[in-house]
Length: 91
Image (cartoon, rainbow, N blue to C red; front, side):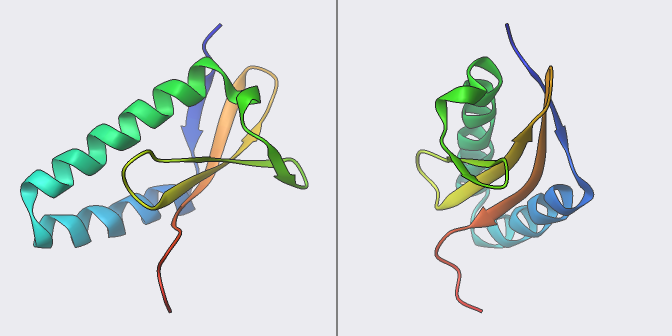
């Protein structure tokens, strides 16, 4: 059974910022990011229980080639992605 994935407003903002950043660096890099994210979301929708619960029901799946974690909550038949965060970013 595949689970339906929804993105919060914060996750959509994270993706817009990432898109802007990589589009300024390289279009091929941007394409590779989106492919990596798509593959990760497919893996997530097929088996959301595979990834460890971290805190208060939050689970995280990491992209394979880019330093990002997809933070999500699992509900009955859907996955709510609430953030997509860079894991090595310094503020």
